[in-house]
Amino acid sequence: MRTHPKTSVAGFVSWVEKQPAKTKYLYLSPNDCPYARYLRTLGMKDFRVGGTEWCKVQGSKQGEIYTIPRRVSWALSNIIRGNTYGALLERLTASRQVVGVLA
Image 1 (cartoon, helix red, strand yellow):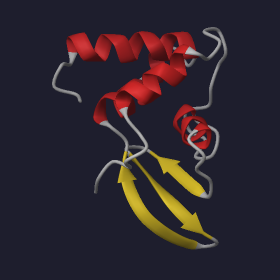
Image 2 (spheres, rainbow, N blue to C red):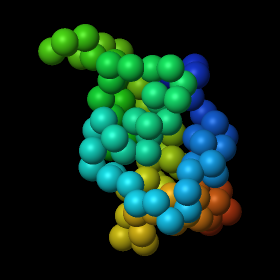
Image 3 (tube, helix red, strand yellow):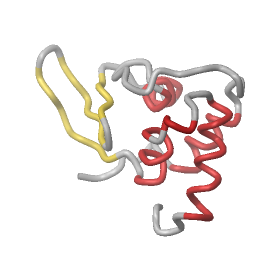
């Protein structure tokens, strides 16, 4: 699997920075989680997000599978520390410093 050429950690972080910090998000929603919302801002549609990957879909058929960068996936899934965009941004920032191997 590979990352999609339109997506990047920096692009996602930049998008999260523009979201209202106190707004809560639904991590487990494959169509409305923060990464799904980010993909829509890139002009993508007809996809499903789940865990560490996402894929394009056409009707009931699954298309190419793309990896969500590990740093982003870790920050998204660590919701025990809060499911607001402000908390997500803190985790994204901390993941670069604390878990530097996550690209």
